[in-house]
Length: 204
Image 1 (cartoon, rainbow, N blue to C red):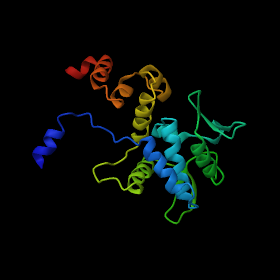
Image 2: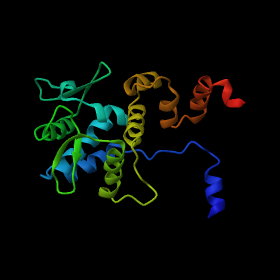
Image 3: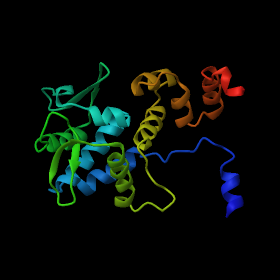
Image 4: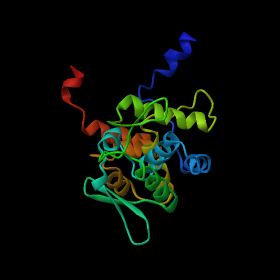
């Protein structure tokens, strides 16, 4: 077992399990009709994190003033001056949550009794919400979602849809193309981009 761990650790860049569009569709089918606040909130989180490629910080800080609804009832979310129009199903999911969300912060905590708090989510809460997605989907123990899973899944879908790396970088608001390249399976090109940002002091 120790030898297996050592070998697995040779590549120190761990692969994040992607939450794909197929996963999201299954989660929507399970949770879309639920009346439980936790189900309503969590589905909205999965939808928004995937379709907007959100970081934890973006999710924590998302305010209702960043969300608008157009004439076609599509929800548009503004992140760093970029507008993200949600799909019909995701628009419905976020609007269901907004109807019961208690304050100007979009996503807040929910206690074990189902009571909605005014407190913003923290990183631990977001981690648990993403882990719950794997449980709802009955994924194997070794396939666990993390807070990066939606961003990884978004990159894979955009790449599969034919979007170029530069466009994906801008969509996900990355400073460099390194992570979009890694998430889309182009590890060699990703490593070259990462090397450009390495500090010479790392080699002391």
